Image (tube, rainbow, N blue to C red; front, side, top):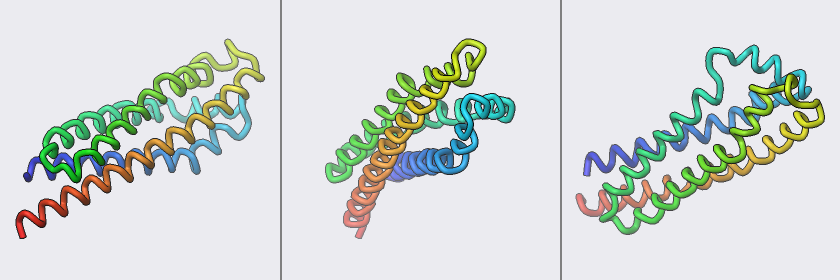
Length: 164
């Protein structure tokens, strides 16, 4: 039970860190990156040479998948928590797939290829698409965080009931 508790809490913690990071990006980072596309894209690239969202989110997202799957496997016997945790994992996997399929190609257009390859109009349109898709990602992460929190509460309640 202690290992299961550790996995669920770790998964919950990582999911909340991801959610906090997404919210931070939306309200602090993205206004700076997208305030004057395409010019602000270049200054953003100059600023994020050492570390960027691309160095932060993929590894942490993958870690959330691993800890989520571990939490699900270890808590499978607790039926009241099982489906909440499973739902959260599905949201986090969908979040990752949406990121890979829709955000990563737009990142490449805006931040790798940039104005050397694409027109100003293309970069502006890509930035709008990126920001729209990002709200979908925030919604998926929020739902995933709510679901894992509910799963944690159900697991904890079951644990307290069994021990008490």
